Length: 217
Image 1 (cartoon, rainbow, N blue to C red):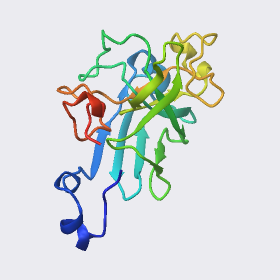
Image 2 (cartoon, rainbow, N blue to C red; image 1 turned 30 degrees about the vertical axis):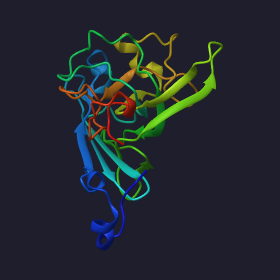
Image 3 (cartoon, rainbow, N blue to C red; image 1 turned 135 degrees about the vertical axis):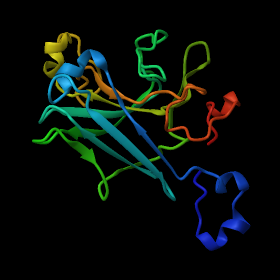
């Protein structure tokens, strides 16, 4: 639930925890090094990607700015449950090959100069900070829930066209599901987990209570 109210009413209406909510989160995405040569405008220098998420009354808005891309590449932006990189940007040795629950958020397109952006006034609008989650309440034969409420605190984008990553070793006969046709290329860039909590940057209020998904809603 969102707690933002007119400023004059804040002190009498809102709980202290709501008043302390972090108003925004800003972070960078890290390149998936294996495919950097196919991603980078000069084939070497990793692209720069900055994400800004601002909390608002009923939902939040997300902006992303990426530079240093090969011109005209197309991507698909997702929020996902986990990153394949550790807090230092190195491949996570514990990553089992799945990004977990994923939400398709937007397409992303590099222009003539290798810049891709989604910025105001056309930012993405959704619940992003602290509360972003999905679930599937269908029951399995053993009576358990198919998917309990699961947060997606990471942001990443994938090559839309598998062929764009083929020169870097991607097998185009084995596409990933990360576009509308479910025939995308590999991960291009993604956020890093926090060194202390292990959570993605869309969680601004970590919790030790597992019933909250380890993030205070």
